[in-house]
Length: 184
Image (cartoon, rainbow, N blue to C red; front, top):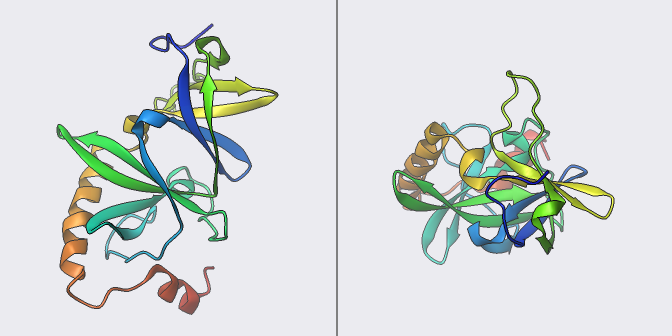
């Protein structure tokens, strides 16, 4: 049983969070960056780790592990930031998502993708486009525009403007606070 709306072979960028493999449609991915220092923005949700400068533009960065209720991402040599495009208020917004590691670009046929599991009415799975199967592994395919709610994307857009104001002040780097409070 395939997923409605997936009728042709599609390419996905796969990445790891904890020991699970996730993927996003490659058409939503702008680029993949090595981890870089971030500027923290005050009063943002915990899952929003800060903003980065991407060729002169301010891009908010979300820790996808925190967003999904996991432990905070531990920064190491494999940590990456995937820059994706999401639509909000008929406008394309760039958003960085921090992941443990990027795996590969893979092609999946429609018959390799099963619908997202239905887990009762309390757990929301609408952000899961489907469950891909490759070899003996399941790949959780995310629907990038449904991973974040409209309210969360509104916060992200506010953080961009606040970050631009912070650029004129002394930025607090992500690593500075973490070294002082022992979270790393």
